[in-house]
Image (tube, rainbow, N blue to C red; front, side):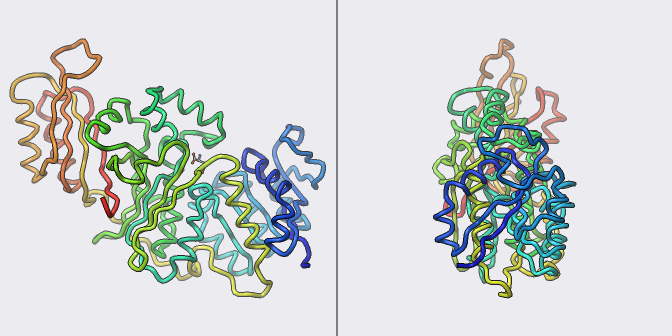
Length: 440
Ligand code: HSE
């Protein structure tokens, strides 16, 4: 049997602690599958004394993750600290520069430095694996990087943030407040250290930028993403969506358009009878539409210790099974130098359906004026309904809800802009894009 694979783990939070436990409890199974043992030999974390449910004195301890990466007697450096700066960045660079293989769950790091790190791995004959960085335990990186080789991808989209999906689901099903749901997601270990990254959409954007590169063979362009989080979504929106046959999900979408590759993250209405609409709680889903295969939809646990640890364990096992000297699979699907420049598709030219919710004064002509502004901008309506606003003691207010057929972002912005000048609007209009799965 080959020598054991020696690993060093930096970061012993929810994921790091779960990884050590799964590696310990599955050591025999892993040894049989990989043809060699996997031994954790070194660890690093901020607080040595914290009780994590295992004995940290079994491993060589490093206070400094970069020191571990630079000096520990290991084959694989596992980075589970998070964040796009140091120590994650410096430690991963130190490990790759030494020719160590690296496994990371760090989407923020890859979104910022992924191309550089993939190039460094290639120069040093090292493997850089990051399955856990996108959609938790769903093997979407491997699917795009390896299984779909030769396909041309047209669109990739999905629910990629467990915290947001958990919040939206519990708000809808149990009528709980946004804040209560977020607290629970934090308690369950789903949320980022700073949950603003979840609810404002940045975490989904980081993940989407990685999928875009793998799907379209372009440079990572995490700053070129149209971004809206879920903080603006109210129970009123969720209930109105349900009334009209839709559910609201935070989606990340990347698709080829005439002007370039459109990358966008925003709350999205999906038809209630689509599979993605049924994806609840912390579960994630990623759909990939490509020419040879057609539509692939992968659904699974998206956040939390075990979901993430499972993906990290798979990445480590891949390294254990790799043959020294064999040609390596490029981390980003093609050699870093062959990634094409990214050309942004502008959100203004986005085409699709829209949900628009307006709170208006209840007076003659308002409904007709809204319909006219839509028609003036060539927007065809699927439905338009007017309802007394619930829980409102000011009886003269009404809610108008419109669902449009496919139109452009520019037309919707113009129509809403015109409505805003009419003087009957109360508060800000709510505009939510509709996304339809291919078959729906
Ligand atoms: N905070 C992330 C989420 C963790 O909620 O999906 C997994 O990347």
